[in-house]
Length: 582
Ligand code: GLU
Image (cartoon, rainbow, N blue to C red):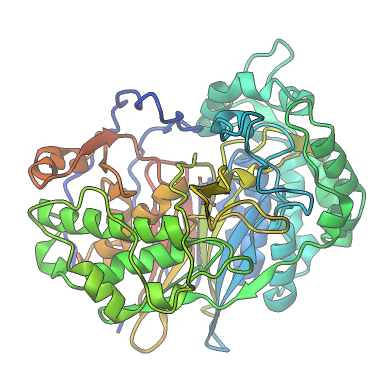
């Protein structure tokens, strides 16, 4: 069975209006929305790639056209993204990759998440007075930098599933870094928004600001010879220069001697970094099997919980109405309550994944959902097979940066990968022409609450909890039918869950699903996307007991629908993404 879209046409989303300022306690989004540009779906029959930037998509498609594998295309695209969308992802950060091997009929997940250095303590982000640091104070400098994983992930994936030589995959990024690329409007906006913070670090300032300290403008041709040199070393020696060589030495030096928040990473931390291949988390949803990323991401488990709760409602008949959205919001609250309490790196704490996805458990949780009234704030449940002991929740908000890409190659291998340096511009520090992540701020700043430990507290060598939710949906025959994921911090979970429902239950095309106005909740207010049809639900949801916030919701959903004969793209109109295929 393949997914056939029924051609329901959603009301055309209105232009994204600039929404009212966020309430005072919430930090502003690091990357302002760059406006909507409606997209036409692209179709292809042999292969396709969708990324957040046309240059990255072009590089990946050229590799696919030369017979490269999905992994080959991902590597070429990721390295170009590192250059042209530097604020969001790159070899200074981490990533989760879901890989479908068509011939072997096997789905694997690669965990290239950043790690805390061995010298990190649970009090890493506690201020001297025993209170958690302010988020914005913790981001810049060396303290927030996790041991990066993206390059190691690409290398391992290439060893297992690559077809073209690694050096060939690096070449497009080298060329662009040397000859220059035009700063996109989105990157220019991000630079302008963060100019003061970027100016603190000399290498970052010199790259993103001009000699007068003014943000470089859209259309400016930017060259990055330092990154070209880094890439040339990588083309020759693989990941060794970063994990055991000169680039790594410079990285450690930069982190340790940061002018603000010096960090404690060592060369040993880099040398010890390993990508972990983990079993993906999967659950049936109606006629499908939905698979995502397990811990240390909370994304897969939370998305699957939302779907498992929604299965108790007739979403296909409810449609994208206020009742349908009410069910989605309430399911999300229940999932977030569990996520905040239980989800963390399960190499360090016991995460009851099986219990959280258990049918009977979700059926009992679903009893709390009403279409005419709200739970307001959900309380975490008591899933089976959980370890005894009380935990305190980590319900901190996180700021979005990050990128999602999807690929299908000529042989039917498929990739769904979310890649990140955490906040826009990460820790704001550059080494070898690339930015370093601030992923450690995804840990809970407070290690405990009222004597109860937080599962997601900082521990040496641990990976911070993520919300990234690269997803692959399979049909009854076990064939992949939909690849999807998004950036957006903890809102990723809502973006992905809603888009899955839109395609699987409401029969929307992937393009309609990613363009649809967002409705989500992180166990607080219902969050509705300003300037879209979602905002029109404000009163209807209030009358169902929701506290409602209407605001910009800056997703970057990228999807491919895999039909019997055709591949069909979904490109988020809120960013600069592009799809290409043949
Ligand atoms: N660092 C976040 C996470 O891993 C992702 C940030 C984002 O998506 O923008 O959940």
